[in-house]
Amino acid sequence: MTGKTRDNYNENYLAYVKTQDPPTKHFKNCLSAFGVGGLICCIGQFIRFMLEYAGLSGDELAGCTSIVLIFIGCLLTGLGVYDRIGRHAGAGSIVPITGFANSVASPAIEFKTEGWIYGMAAKMFTVAGAIIVFGVFSGVLVGLVYLFI
Amino acid sequence: MGQEILLILLAYVKAFAVGGAICLIAQIIINFTDLTAGKILVYFMLAGVVLTAIGVYQPLVEFAGAGATVPISGFGYLLASGAMKGAEQGFFQAITGSLAAASAGVTAAVVFSFIMAIIFKSRTKRN
Amino acid sequence: MVNQQIKIGNTVFFKNLPRIKSFAAICGSKEKEGIIGEYADITLDDDMYGESTFEKAECKMLTNAISLAIEKGGFKEQDIDVMLSGDLLNQIISASFAARDYDFPFLGVYSACSTMSESIMLAAMLVNAGYVKRAVAATGSHFASAERQYRYPLEQGTTRPPQSQWTVTGAGGCTVCEGDEGIKITSATMGRVCDYGVIDVNNMGAAMAPAAADTIMQHFKDTGTQPTDYDLILTGDLGALGSRIVKDLTWEKGYDISSRHVDCGEIIYKVIEDEFQGGSGAGCSAVVLNSYVLSKMRAGLYKRILFAATGALLSTVSSGQGESIPGISHVVELEY
Image 1: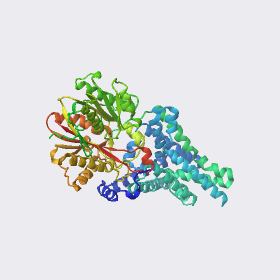
Image 2: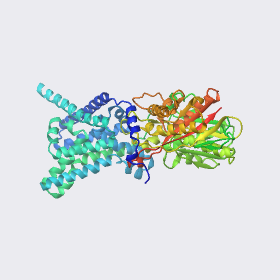
Image 3: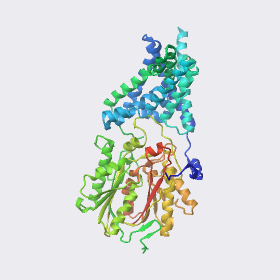
Image 4: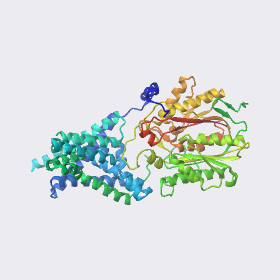
């Protein structure tokens, strides 16, 4: 490997590039993330109340709430609406569970042209697979720690 | 009656504030680092697991309801609390508990994505 | 000012003056709203171009650009000796799949977004040396196929950082021939790969600007010219941010290109700088050169231009492994 290492990078140039960067609109980004994120959580709360009214409770209630939200996320992804929301909302649409649904549904729709098995199914978890892997691993870790203390 | 409506309204306000705040933290992290969406999702899920394990997240869920369960950290909360409940029952449950608790979300994501992939086609966008 | 030497430094001089006889460009629906729309031969309303996948659409655009360039030059398919082409997709599938529709030989070239200037340069070399009489140089890109290969699925709701650029949907091609009709290709400078250590894959402008500055200054040095000798110094897809950087870098070394410099990526869309920096992709410089710029040259508006398409030589694997982004730029000098 004869490539450049971090030692001989042109630090001056990188520092100069930083000064040329267009400013990030912190306030606007944060406001829209807060607003959209809060709104999605309110919708979640609304679904929760509705399902509670329908007679669900406990784990079932929590599970069904996320199922409905994931359905909404997948549907909006399929309709091509979610990426438009995401462009403006930033983290406000990434962090809620609908963003997880979006990260599963979008590669599924996109890679369908490469076949149903190696395209759609295999690539479905290109982004969300990391969440499952780290989630399961850390969950097992937590379970074992709690088992032995 | 009036008090009940007030309680419901309060639940919405709390969900909005806490859920919005979690997204706000994520946005601030995105603004100041160049983390991509996938990494943010993983870190927030892990944060949910850790906070649940040390007992901080459970009170937050009781306080904010959907405000704490809808963000991806709530997914981590599900995983961790499932594992913790399982650990009370034995070794096998300690290992399977986390994914069992989160199975609703994962199943829904897979099934609905499959259906959407059948129905919809990817489209190019212009802005 | 005919130079006797065939090569000085990294610059090759074409004694026999190969000509760009005809050119054609196709652009997508977003691009046609910009200045390119009036000059492109075909503008698409539907970026799928009637095909079932984006890759097929890209291939079809490229095929049509090539066919149209051949047709506009008054040639038939059997008149063409070779075609040089490339694109952004893995294993340059659009170009090679486009080539299967033709009988003439195909040479695949790849230097990311600077493929257009590299293929013109190589075509000019072949024609100048007399190996071929007529060559086609073409390249193209498609927003959706590039997005899916280099970034995220289209439907995924991610934010675009303000440094990012928009891959151009379009294809352009031209015929390089011997003879005395058309736009002269007088010299070309082969670019060196420059890597100043930019890692941010969204900031391609900053990654490519050093390469553009390096090759442009090398050209000035080798030919003994000054920026003011040219009517236009056209860089490929640096975007608004990269254009500022390239002006600064050349100014620092004593060449002031600011009055002559135009960037294809910056002019192709209406750029709102705090949202995105402009167009990018192999199609960007190809479409702008083969529609607007060459038309204006033919109309006599520009006499002598430098075309320096710029490319970022990265892949998803290299950026995943934390490698920085090497840039490259090849310069072609055109005269009419």
